[in-house]
Length: 407
Image: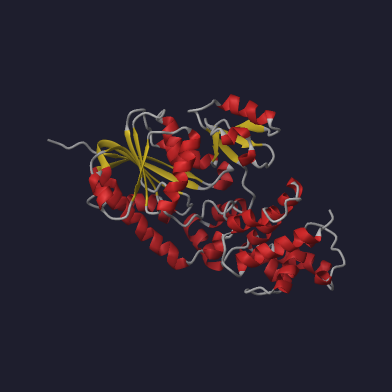
């Protein structure tokens, strides 16, 4: 493989923005890919994958290169040289690579690979937390899986098409997919491709959504005609899935504290042909109080650490702080206690996170059930999804039912 200067410069610029300016990796990569119209799919793939790999293994590569944050451009080139050497790429004789100790790099890699926090490239505190919550053996397997590149999974929009027709349509646009037996609405791409340019996407035939995330809406057990509330809707991946399960019938209320996210949902809903969604910004306690005791179904896709989706957001492990985890647990409890009041007697609620930590998952549900609001609910079932077992994102979901009043 030959290294091209303009692609390598793009990688270094991207790493500078992510490591030193604190920008989000996915946003940076979107910007980089628009940089040169002459780049083909292989060039764009090289930039995206190289940036993501170096972000994923930042701690390991920095240790081998003997550099410390904040990184100067020379430091970033040294980390790039480590990446290239470990991939077996011959370094060109550019000034950035003079005196690269190739044999020493491989030796250091072998040595550091015996220590999990370097091998999987994670901060000490996350490593300690993972061991404490999941145990040594399970955490070791989970964090290794979280460092692999995630597959691209599509969710077919059943309001517009079927899984088989979507597969054939994508095939006609040179994109091969395969069915996932455990996931009724999912198609997995055989090879990575830009699906957003396809005719099928423009026509609203699918959304990109991980297979684990697709389990959540199914878990809520919705039926056409119900009044369903998705209270942390965000840009609405799960909301749109709920709409298709409801066959566009009934009332679906999408709520979020961020209006900008709901605006994105509005655009996506239009493309999906969804017209039973009403959007409400949570700008005070009023919108919640108005719905007390009204919802047949409630989805709380709670804010969390995101430790189940590091494959998609590898930079998150460098941005997370221990205080954030403690604060978010309090937020999760508040959200459960306040929002659960919207469920009517006999109605059901799902609490979900994209975290693998029991303290954000089972423990939160257990705590909730001991509160005044929680005593009105019965625990029905829950599901823990670990990436190393499922091959998809780490997720948690619990189904609770509100008791009928006893006379």
